Amino acid sequence: EDKVVQSPLSLVVHEGDTVTLNCSYEVTNFRSLLWYKQEKKAPTFLFMLTSSGIEKKSGRLSSILDKKELSSILNITATQTGDSAIYLCAVAPGNTPLVFGKGTRLSVIA
Amino acid sequence: NAGVTQTPKFQVLKTGQSMTLQCAQDMNHNSMYWYRQDPGMGLRLIYYSASEGTTDKGEVPNGYNVSRLNKREFSLRLESAAPSQTSVYFCASSGTAGLSENYGYTFGSGTRLTVV
Image (spheres, one colour):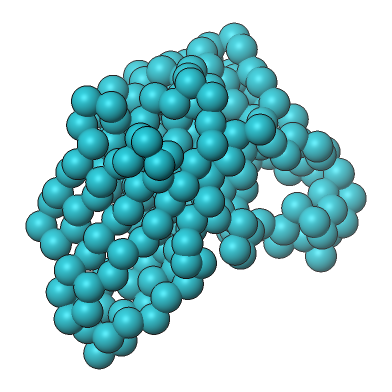
């Protein structure tokens, strides 16, 4: 059974802190790993990581895929209150739908 | 630039009532999905449609049915609602089953359903 595990499940930090969110997976025919940010409504896409693109960066957010360890991290530097959200990790196993982890709820306090 | 449109946004049902959640996308995507999201559970797949004319069960299909009406529309039906179906429901679409070349899925804004 395909599985995606995220840790921690929740996290509270102060503005300006750096945080690291973790995602590990066990899937057949791994194709890619995706990170989404979910605020009040629908998840919005952050990054897609594949064998040919194991590191992505956008502003204060960056992500790395470790195919050997079957895991990924999402780093957020200099956190702001607007970073407060649920961060979802998902993996694409072959041509079947994405499998999502339970998410990490990040709260950034001023 | 609508993307994925879900209706209704909110709904309260009594146990045993039926209803249909509607979803439409205007991105010419082949694949569409229905997920439910419960606190602390992430997104769990109910049903999906890899292409027009096909539907398949996901992780939690019991109590639901779906219809892929055409390429644009994918509806989710609850025939006899139960309190365990209280959840937030998301519809999503992608270019191909499992993965888009660019950015995974595009999600609708969700339907918050309460069954009392």
